[in-house]
Structure formats: C-alpha cells, structure tokens
Amino acid sequence: MGFRMGLITPWRGAAVALSLLAGAAAAQQGPRVTAFTLENGMEAVVIEDHRAPVVTHMVWYRVGAADEPQGASGVAHFFEHLMFKGTETIPEGAFSKIVAENGGQDNAFTSRDYTAYFQRIAADRLETVMAMEADRMRNLVLSENAVETERKVILEERSQRTDNNPGALFSEQMSATLYLNHPYRVPVIGWRAEVETLSRDAALDFYRRYYAPDNAILVVAGDVDPAGVRRLAETHYGPVAPSGAPRAVRPQEPPHLAPRRIEMRDARVRQPYVQRQYLVASRVSGAAEDAAALSVLAEVLGGSGVTSRLAQSLQLDQGIAIGSGAYYAAGSLDASEFGVYGAPAEGVALETVEAAIDAVLATLAAEGPTEEELARARAGIAASEIYAQDSGAGLARRYGAALAVGLSLDEVEAWPERLKAVTAEDVRRAAGLLRREASVTGWLMGLDAEGKQG
Image 1 (tube, helix red, strand yellow):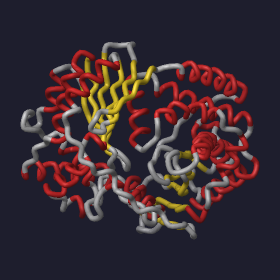
Image 2 (image 1 turned 180 degrees about the vertical axis):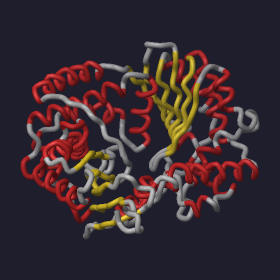
Image 3 (image 1 turned 120 degrees about the vertical axis):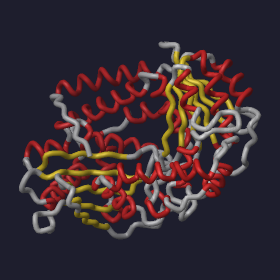
C-alpha cells in the first residue's frame, strides 16, 4: 500500500486540468495505428513512433491465471517462466542472452486475464526477436529437469513476495473472500500446495491449448513501417498453425446478498489498516460509461494526494489517518473490484477510520464531487493518458492490455474522451454503485506484546 503526496490548490487544479486535457486532445491525434489479421487468426497492431530508432515487440496471449484448470493454480505464471527455456533451434536459457547480445531487453508478465512477452530493441533487429518469439510459440522444448528447476524458482518467489509479506497475504485473503465463485479469487502466483504439484504434462497441456496464433495479439510499437511489419509477421508468424481452442468459459459470480468481513493478525505488521473492496463492473463486463465514472470516482477519492476527498477528511480535517486511497481495476475481462483503504494514526482504532471512510462515501453518493475536485481528477487522469503515450513501450502496453480482454481499437482510442465527458453527476451515481452487499471489509492488524490484537 503506497501513499502519494502532493498539493494543488483548487484554482490551480482547474488550470492544470484544462492544460492537460488540451495536451491529451493533442496527443490523441496520434499515434498512427495500423491493424491487420493473419490467415491463421493472429491479430496484429502496429503503432508508429519515430522519435527514436527503437521498437517494442510484444505478443499477448488471451490466457491468464483466471483461465487455469481447477486444482492447477499458478500454471499460467509457471508457464511464463518456462517459455524462456529453449526450442530445438534456441538452446535452453539462450533466449534472453541473444536479445541482450543484440543490445535489447526482454521480459514477460502474467495477469489474471493475459500473459505477455516483450522485447525492446533497435528497430533494425526487429526480425531477430520476431523470429525467436514465433519459434517458441509452438516449438518449446521442456525437459523434466527444467520443469523441476523452475518450479523451485516459483516457490521461492512465492516465499519472498507473498508468504513473507503480510500485506500480500492479506490481499490474497481479500480476493478469496470478495469473489464467491469466479477464478479471480485465486492468486496469480497460485496456491503453494498446488504449485508444488504442477507437472511437465500440466504445463504442456496448457501450452498446446493456449499458445497459438489464433489466441495471440502481436503489438509492434516504434520506429517501424506497417507494411514492413506485416511482411515480417507473415513470414514468421504466418506459418504457425492455429490451435482452434478459444478461451474457455469462466465460472461467473452469483448475486452477492451479504457483506463479508475478515480480520487478519500477523506479528510482522507494523502499520495496521482497513481496506474495503466492492464488486463492480469493468470496461468489458459492464457499461463503458459506468467504468469511466468509477475511474474518476477513484481519482476523486484517493488519486490526487492530500487534496483527494479521503485524505482531506481523514488525514487533514480529522487527523485520524496517516494514509488513505482508492483504486479501481477498470481493465479486467470480467467483473472487477473498486477499493478504498485507510491507515490509522497512532492511538486511533480501525473502526474509527472505517466509519470515517463510510461517511465520505455516503456524502459523495448523496452530493457528488465539487467542481474543484472534478477538475483535479480530470487533471490526474489526463496526465496518466499523456504519460501512457510517452514511449513506444507504454503505447504497446496500453493497446495490448485492452485488446487482450476484448476491447476494440475504437474503444481504446475513445477511452480518453469518455473519461473527459464524466460529469459530477456521473461520479455521484458511480458512488451509488458501491453496494455494501457486494463487498468485503478487511482489517490487517499486528499483535501486542501478549500476542493479542494490535
């Protein structure tokens, strides 16, 4: 949990908003985006950015942790690691070495909804990395030893990032409580007991089903010519056979009829906090207008530092919290979460902070934001939109993440305008979408000297 600090006076916030919105409008006139689809079903997007002779090459697979077979949690992330092992033409462990020898960088990441692999390299080396990425799409070679070694790496990663971090463990418990039936309740890294049993056969079954051109999106951003990218894609990705296996239908959430609560105590906790998550629609699963309004609501509540509504009330006016914030995961494929949190000041009870958060939410649902708050929120969102277009890599991620969950190019390009169109009344209405019946409230606490609740 992080806290962003900053101060913008109301009149200056409005001026900044107008300036940034104008910049966003100018930025929206570019970049130039070209799209095509190969005969094997692989979609491709080319984003021209000629400011530097570099290129970002990404392949996004429409599969993430929420698509894993039951009992095999963590296999999507596990397989992301295995993709770097090798093929018949690239020796085990040589993929990243070859990229580095050509002056580039590479990596990958797994989310609940997609898995992406990328290289950033000089534009004249694009064909090198594209040929390598196409090769491992269907020709990966996995030995039992490689699988065993990487499983140990994953378990150590879980130990360091999750099991040794009470905040991360608490986050897992929150998700597992918020989602009654949907696989978003399972952590991306997987439950330890199931990761320990992941086998070579499980990994290969996952690979054969999902790693294919008809389940992938190619995104190339940088100093490139669209016609040239298409020729390279047809040469290297074109011959790869499709799998004909679309994303499996996921279990969905039943109606949420009762709010839930959890309390977690851990001796390692030094700063307790209260967090609430609400089940809400995403850009994909619900109306885009609601998603835009929820995005602005999150910015009003906690996105503008000490000038945000939560910080003003809890930290400055009442002095009961040392940090607060809000967030919204708008880009999920299925129903998503809207969250708020507050960390109490010394000697303040968690229930006091929780009650103060409830009061702020109730006021926003009844009255909506002020024009000054709306101006600051627009400024923050406009700045984020501009920064997202500041590099080829940022553009590639923006388009790839949206397309991988089913949004169209038109929807991607219309999103900034949709955010700008959000009114104070829209924000007030969005606050009313936060239903207590569809929420989980969690307290993360430490232990006192006697091992009691801290």
